[in-house]
Length: 484
Image (tube, rainbow, N blue to C red; front, side, top):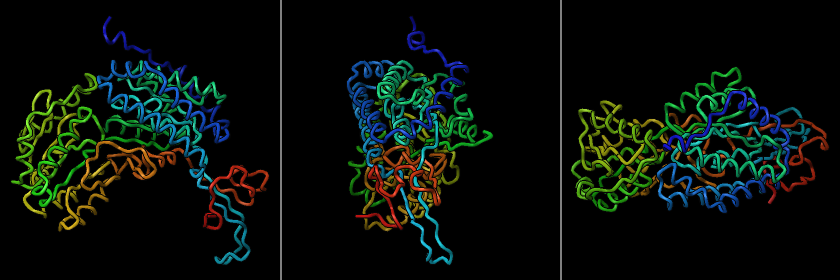
């Protein structure tokens, strides 16, 4: 039996898609009204079941070629995300409750009515799972966790790179949903490209989340926008994650920066959306010599044949440019290509995301070229700066980085995205389709919420978080201040 036959999972039929979306639509109102403690308990129980299921790591290793230690860390991250969102739900601050009692003397010149505002769930969400994180950005990953936490039913479009794992994790999520008495239809899953498009374009779907290629994400984004009723599409598409090294940093810490770069580019065989694809260094600096002298760095296996083909094509595209040369590397190793800032400024097409163990080292002659390159950036997930606070270019580089990226790093590498309260994993297009949002960290819940204000509604008819007695003990702003 071939690998394809072993991994085969039937595509979801149009009839099944219709049934799943109808179930999600029917679940939207009762799941949104479910007690916050119950919603948090569902997330906690999913996390516990993931941690206790031994077969998942083996399935992921068989389908993705990722090493077991990496998968184990990722599964830990996934269950942690679920538990963190359970805490967010329990706290209730994500509802952003704001109450302005009626005020006949309101200074704008007319009386202010009683206004009470809170966030409510958008409705059913479709989550397009990623290939490179079979747990953390997949069936029970951050997009699913944040949407369920917000009170939205979720339909996951499984990634074709790990269908059996997706089916196993989906079974766990579905079982927990049922055990907790959540509405049927709160969670569903589809397989196959056409099924994913069918869910996305169904009129009952209220939002979509996506992590993947620029081409695939843009095609889905356009579909979401062309619907008779367009919906928010939260797509993470692509990023070259530039790294800028000042002349002082290159002189003082050449070996340290070189080893850090190679570690970042080789981690998970370079199959990370935050991997540095562009490293800008001073011409004739010791950093270039340190990189050339580092010797071959093993790259590890790529996820699957499709990723291998895409990586080879992207490297060939960059390497084939007349102004690009090979600095080091070969088959099975980290590849370092090199060019000049002059060449990039003359032809920005040289810069291209290489999803795998490769990066382009760009040399600049002076600070003028360095800053011109930084200010010419497209939208990015991250921009990293290696320098010292006293560097003449530090402030200007930070300004350029802030304009281009959602996360700006100082003397640190962008791989390894912490799941926390202050994280921002997003950026201007083409990094994402929604630069005001994040797909990592607790703020991700805001993607699946919208604010509603209730004006002069009787207290007994208000949602519990807005009532005078605040029965749920939700954090609230009253007249613009929060009680201490």
